[in-house]
Length: 113
Image (tube, rainbow, N blue to C red; front, side):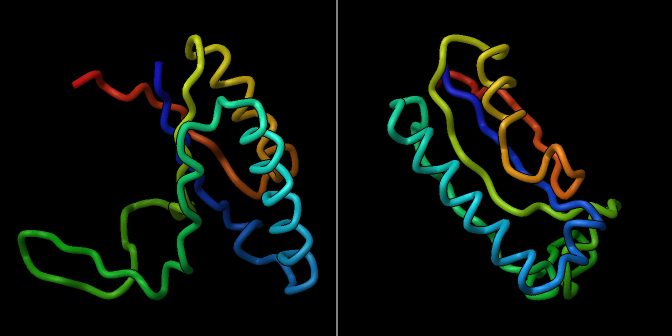
């Protein structure tokens, strides 16, 4: 079954210094390499650019920035293909920065088509 991992950077993650951010990105790259080698990473997904480059589209028009009512901002996604949600959660818990409060991960089943 496929599960989408949605990563959202917390306020503390958004305030990392450039050296800390660079180190964190290296950890994330290693995470992708590790899980790609297991065959459970169905699609490595993509990291998203910073939210100040986003546009939000609503019925009332288009505005700059993400402006979804949250302090955390969507950072990227990955797609897993694993046996069940428990396994997907276990993998998501290993995402670099979760343990330090820099990112939160949402695991969501992908509906079969």
